[in-house]
Image (spheres, rainbow, N blue to C red):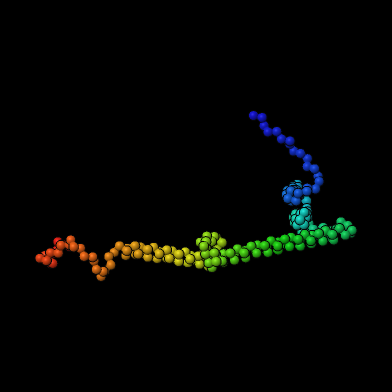
Length: 205
C-alpha cells in the first residue's frame, strides 16, 4: 500500500501573523522554544542567562539561570557601558514585575468573585430559594455546616414520606373495617333459633 505523500517540512515565512488567536499560539510555542534553547546553553556551557519577553497582550514573561533576578542584579552591578542601557533594563524589569503582580492580582480578584458567586448560589439552595433541587447540591463543594443542614433536610424528607405512607396505609385499613356501633340492615332470611343454647353457640350465626 502506497504511503501518504506529504510536502515535508516547509519554511515558514517571517511576517506578522494577522489572526490574533494564531499569533498568541505562535508566541506561546516560540517562547517555549527560546526557553529550551537557553536551557541547552546553560547545560552545555554553564552560562548564566536572562530573558525578558512581553506577549502581544503586554504580559511579561521572564526566564533566567540561576534566576532572572540574580542575572539582572549582576548586570546592574557591572554595567558594560554608561550609555543608560542598565537603567533602561532596570526600568523594563520594574515594569515586568509590576505587570506580573497586576496579573496575579486580577486573577485573585476573579477567583474571589467566582468563589463569592458560587457561595451565594449554595446559600440560596440551602435556604430553600431553589428548594426544588436542593438535594442536587454538590457535597464536595459544601462545608461542614452546610453538610449538616443538608443531612437534616434529608432526614426531614424521610420522616415526612414515612408519615405519609403510614397515614395512607391507616386510611386504607379503616375503609375495609366495619364501623362499631352502626346498625346492620335486617336480613329476612336470617334464622334465629329461640331454642338454642347461648352458652354452646348458635347455628344461626
